[in-house]
Length: 396
Image (cartoon, rainbow, N blue to C red; front, side, top):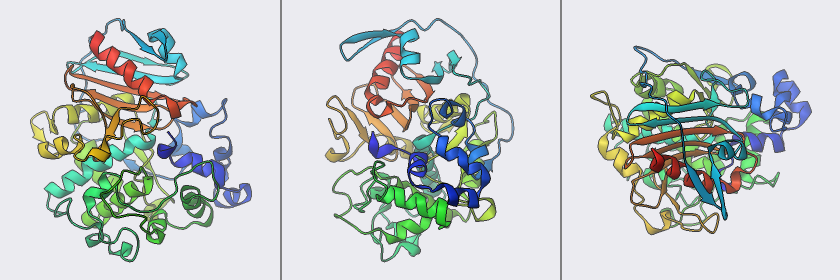
């Protein structure tokens, strides 16, 4: 789905070799980032390729109990039936983790990945940002979603974000004109990353140059810059880098097993996290974030995310946020606060990243599924993955 292609595709299509060498010698990796013989390895080494900020684990590690079982399921898609051993290679899977009733029932790694691999999130990071916004509101750092984002990010006054409610930014309905066409070297997304990685312009600067194409709150338009603006909101409201706030409010409290990293636009203290992209973590730690939302924001008796925020985040509240058929003819996945929400009766919701990254939560079956992949056909595979996840949940 082209509207959700993450940071690195743009880099690969826009950065000149000479400029990259001048900035950072290992950035030559960018030019082969998606090469078939290199991308599998690259996707688990983002912190070695790009600047990043650490997110440290702390306290007692939470461990899912293990109750392994055979994963016997099949699903029908495109007029064909597939089973597990066809599903995994077909969608170029690097890791699949299934949690049922709070126990790991299936965990498998492929293509060189291991349980310790720090696999990149791509746009799954957006759902973490949403959680941090809810926490900041609960702490009184942000007055509420109806407040204009420019109350907290005054540097965006005069841009298309002036006066736009935080809620509309969360819903990808800011009304800001932003061309997220990765096939074009002159699109906004390509220009934004060229300026950031080649010229050295801060990633946040691009948002200040944008203008409105419609009133906010009228139409869904998935643009990653909206999430970057939420990142700016959080940094200004909390006075902390995103990675530090994530560490304090989620990574530590959930007993994550590993330190992680969040890609930034430049090294050191001056770096700003790409809010919409590129956390790097293990599948089990991603699953803990899914568990947090499955449990309504509670973690072992501790309130981490407000329960009302979790519910508000996963229930589309406008007809245009359902957008049936928006990306493929069979598309039935809506959107709310940086979470994808499949239509149906089981209360499912998903964090989705390009190239086949998913945190799928099914409250009806008490199932969490984390899947990472390096799938070059990801553009058309969201509905197939959802179909497979539903089949796994039902089979358990």
